[in-house]
Length: 294
Ligand SMILES: *[C@@H]1O[C@H](CO)[C@@H](O)[C@H](O)[C@H]1NC(C)=O
Ligand SMILES: *[C@@H]1O[C@H](CO)[C@@H](O)[C@H](O)[C@H]1NC(C)=O
Ligand SMILES: *[C@@H]1O[C@H](CO)[C@@H](O)[C@H](O)[C@H]1NC(C)=O
Ligand SMILES: *[C@@H]1O[C@H](CO)[C@@H](O)[C@H](O)[C@H]1NC(C)=O
Ligand SMILES: *[C@@H]1O[C@H](CO)[C@@H](O)[C@H](O)[C@H]1NC(C)=O
Image 1: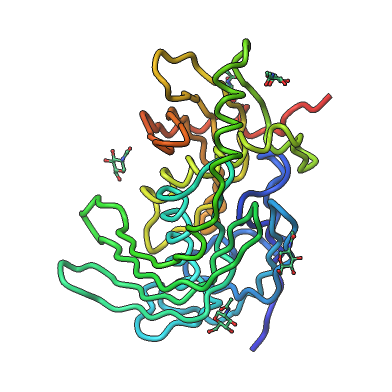
Image 2: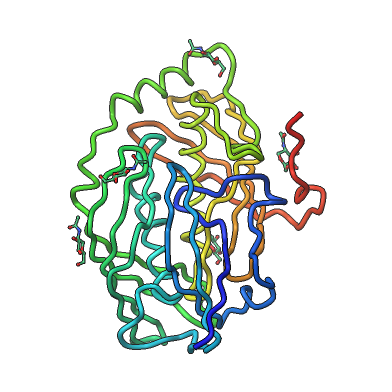
């Protein structure tokens, strides 16, 4: 079997760099973009807030809709497992609690009623800020064909949910609420992969909120990661919710596309993230240029 190595900057919580330089497969990208290609994760080097995955792409092609026991390192299992990460972020995420898929231990896929597909997975999930890892069992149900329904997820990761972040959330909330000036930021991270420490809660909140988009958009054939917050603005509110307008760049790893979304949502420690509006923005070539960083 001949193997080629493709280096891709992939993500747990995000990819470094600007949208223009985010992902540069070493091998030709036409192959890596093929939905049938089967990369194998051979090594993962993790830095906080980013992850570099080395994929070994096999020449052999595998049925996209693999059924039965899955190779945990191959795309079908990885794609389904990634949806669990997004689900956990939408349910339990906060500016101080962000979940990332660490590893798939085993996976199984089968066709079920209503031409849906059911994945059963054993995975390790990492809470990125406190750096806690736990094994979770999860089930992901994808609708197919005409059905526009999002994937349905069930997951049991009890230990991760017990992490207590109330005090930090309350402090961040008060800081945003009481401050004379509304919060705003651009390019998280910047093109050097850097995020100012006091901007990290806004970056983490952006990841969590993006998971609502990624959960809604994910299918059996996609693998979404949050790439960058292009900008974020806190909006004034009359009630006790904080309100944010985010412009977000997502990276879809199968098509190698960078997709722009506008996301309007509220957050408070008590209510969590509530999405008011999500809108995919048209392709904009100016937007794809690396940001100016002086
Ligand atoms: C996270 O925890 C693991 C094991 O507990 C450790 O090996 C790793 O270095 C930690 N990572 C960070 C970024 O602190
Ligand atoms: C998670 O499961 C894997 C495989 O079953 C096992 O090797 C690993 O030790 C488990 N990790 C924890 C933290 O329980
Ligand atoms: C108000 O926000 C600014 C800008 O984000 C920040 O530098 C400052 O520390 C905040 N002030 C308080 C009291 O939190
Ligand atoms: C989720 O996506 C579907 C289409 O796939 C869309 O109809 C629905 O409005 C989306 N949900 C949200 C909250 O935008
Ligand atoms: C946010 O970033 C996007 C993409 O770079 C840009 O089109 C938009 O004008 C920016 N909005 C603000 C308020 O800076």
